[in-house]
Structure formats: structure tokens, C-alpha cells
Length: 134
Image (cartoon, rainbow, N blue to C red):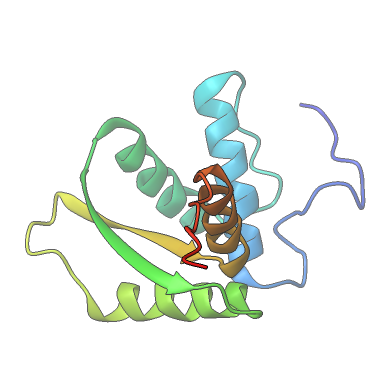
């Protein structure tokens, strides 16, 4: 077994949020599935089995995706808006078929792109000649 370098890898005895521990266990499981053996590294067996089952289910069972499209203006705090929107969809929208999952795709309208297109289209038009009646 390869020894773990202190400070370079999160271990099961670390004082951190559970989501960070889950992420590390998930990385070990994905590494195990792709190219090497799994090293427990002090994580609880319960957490390891729970995440192994979750990742194996997503790895081998292809779920159908329902795409939800959302079109928005580009705000200055777009990351915060995206996070809140994803939380709302995750909490309040459930597919009726358990074999399907939701995928939220967010599109933004940026004023700059709109103006660039508008300006380039107006430059391509031929100027009209105005006949003088004088």
C-alpha cells in the first residue's frame, strides 16, 4: 500500500465538511473503476459503500435525461443566480419516472453580442441614394 503524504490528500479523520470527504471517496472510486485499486485511507466503511453504490449505479445504468432550458439576461452575480436556480429545480422538480434525471441548461443574452450583431448587419447594407428635388 502506498503511504499517504500528509497535507496532500484528504483523509477520513480530517475536520471538514462531509461533501469534501464524499468528493475524495468518489475520486478514489472513479480511479478504482478506471485504472487502479481502491485505498480506504481512513474513511468509514459506511461512507465508502454508500458512495461506491451511488457511483456504480450512475456508471453502469444509463438514465434518460430531461433537459430543462432557461433563458436569462446576463446579471453581474450570475454564479449566485445559477446556484439558486439549480437548488430550486432540484428541490421542487421531480421526474415521474425514477429512471430519468433532470439536466438544467441556462442560456444568457448578453447585450454586447446583440449590439455586435446589430452593428455588423447594418454595415453590410448598401446606403440608399436620396434623390434631391431641388
